[in-house]
Length: 240
Image 1 (tube, one colour):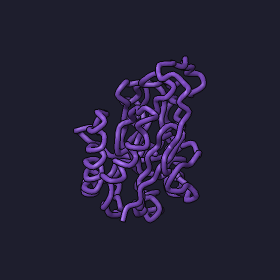
Image 2 (cartoon, one colour; image 1 turned 90 degrees about the horizontal axis):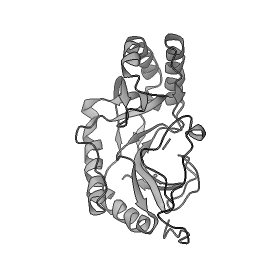
Image 3 (tube, rainbow, N blue to C red; image 1 turned 135 degrees about the horizontal axis):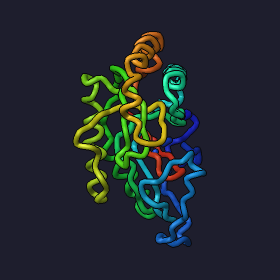
Image 4 (tube, rainbow, N blue to C red; image 1 turned 180 degrees about the horizontal axis):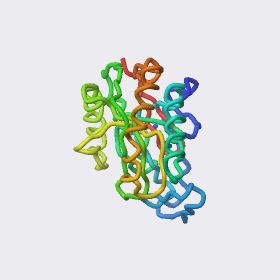
């Protein structure tokens, strides 16, 4: 996220989180908009879009980093030459700290206030990364190439997830995965292509090791804030 986004509301669209947020309450929450996958690069929603219900998630942003963009570009070049799969760059590279969930508009302001309270006191930290891996979404409709977090760096992430889960549980929203695999997705393609992509991991790993060494300071930058994306609204939470 750019630094011009203030602590309250920003209208910047994010791939993937003010004082009081006022939304138009004239729409019906139950009105479902017909989805057209051709408008979303063949992707389908894991839940239908409904007016007044906002898709949301909490994350660490990695989209504004030359090191990450270089990693993304070089891995895409390797995959395009080694497979017939059409891999697409993630528009906004990030590390998720919650599942994507839905929240009704009248709950956004109290939810953000609760989340801010839960995250208060968490300190800045630096993440180390240990390689590439292949991930498939729960619906098995999309395959991702991601950069995984080193196991020794997962401590502060688990603490943040625990705090976010406290807030989610109060609103009866889905908690994060019990079996956590923290990573930053950099590329995706349609379908369950895990087996095919894993065959290319040895070559991709060589790319990772070289770029990570060259761009270490940019890729393993200090985590200073978290973001909450709610529809097209963005909120940030500074770490101390």
